Length: 92
Image (tube, rainbow, N blue to C red):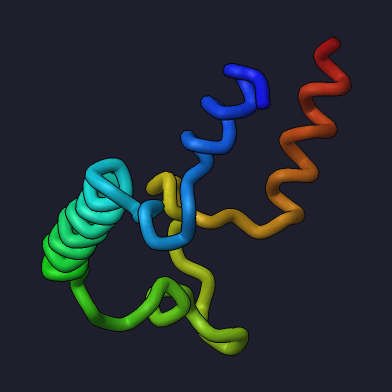
């Protein structure tokens, strides 16, 4: 048997000698630490959430009278806006 074959056969690991080692421990520990930190962050964000009526509760129903638009300008009937558009076209 040659010298190289002896080195290869002697260095071949067996099932009993191979394990996760320090690298496996570090990887699992890092995953566990990241999970704990993410859960703590999520709990902190959930504590800030205000539970209440959703955005649909603020909008009037189909039979409600028209109020001012969200920008604060009073609501105008469509006929008034059409008249303004016609005046602008006549001026130009």
